[in-house]
Amino acid sequence: GKYYKDVYPLNEEQIKLYQKLRENLEKNIKILEEEIKLKNDYHRECEIQRARLLSTVIIYRKVIHELVRENDPNNVKYANRWLKKGQEIRDMIDKAYAQNPAINIDEIFDGLVKLEKEIDEGTVDIDRE
Image (cartoon, rainbow, N blue to C red; front, side):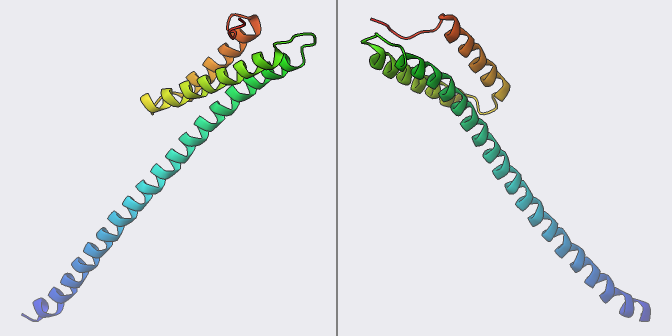
């Protein structure tokens, strides 16, 4: 008897404390998981914006090139066409991410580097009619 009377309440109290600790740990784990997801989503959004920015820089180089061409009556028209092509590229980037959220960012950047090379070589161009 006396041992049971003295020890049992202590054991019950410890069990309650452990249960409370477990509940708190589960809550903290959920909070951490949510924070990780938010950080991953933020990082992903930053990657998308970096890819969009790089595509804009690539296209703006061509826009400026068109605008500074002398004695070309179509330079403004061609510059505008490059701007439209730039929007198409940004839309493709957005679509790629929307279709495959796990797409590797390096694939997008490699594609943009390849695109820039093709533009510089004249393989990719605008409608010049």
